[in-house]
Structure formats: structure tokens, C-alpha cells
Image 1 (cartoon, rainbow, N blue to C red):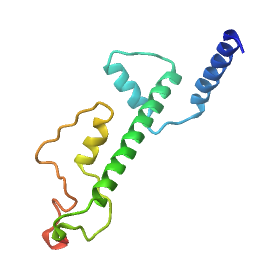
Image 2 (cartoon, rainbow, N blue to C red; image 1 turned 180 degrees about the horizontal axis):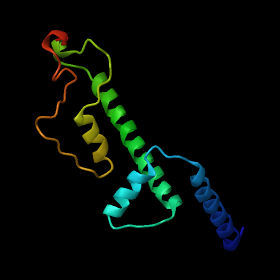
Image 3 (cartoon, rainbow, N blue to C red; image 1 turned 120 degrees about the vertical axis):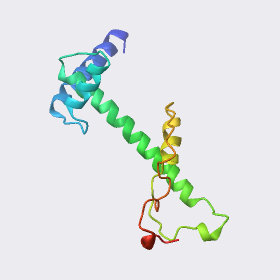
Image 4 (cartoon, rainbow, N blue to C red; image 1 turned 90 degrees about the vertical axis):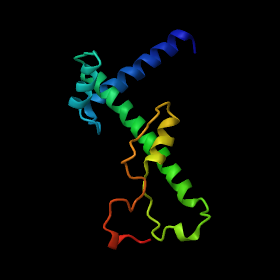
Length: 131
């Protein structure tokens, strides 16, 4: 296939994709995307472009959440030297450390304040803790 034929196929696929965005309702509302786009100085009346940004943001959030889950699973599966600190509950709890590691892979450095909880039992009633 020559370049001209491939270019036509790419253009038609892009046009079809952009038109499909009009029938798609992204998780991130159009108003929220428009708000942040306007805060950054970008204005475009084309709803398809707003939804394209929403889909890209949704994909980014999904990828970060998935990577954070993998870090969380690896942390829970890692052998614990002190058996008394072995959690009895096998629920996965996402910590700021997991999220920070996942975001770091995408070039986002997250620093959290000391008052953020990095333990699932932090802030719980002492009677309900399983320590």
C-alpha cells in the first residue's frame, strides 16, 4: 500500500474514532475537563476534543491505579521478618507509598505530609485494631 492509501485509512480511522466520542460518556465529566483545560489557558468548543482529553486522563488514572495495586500486592506478599507485624487480615490496603511508587514510574514525584496515614489501622478505634 502506498503512502497516500495509508494516509487515507489513518484519516478515516481518526474521523471514525472522533465521531464515536460523541456517543461515549467518559468517567470524568466534560465540565471538569473543560474547567482544567480553561485553567491552563486552553479553549476549544469541540466536545470531541474535550472527551478525548477525558479518555486520556481516564486511561492515565487507570494505569496508575493498576500499577499501585501491583505495588500493594508485592508489599503484602513480601516476607515479614518480624512475625508479630504480620497482618492477620489479608485485605489489600493502598498506601501512599504504593501510590508514590506507581506515580514515580510516570514521572510524577509525590511527597506527602507526615500526617497522612500509611497504615490501615491508623485512626481506627484502638479496640477495633487487630495488633
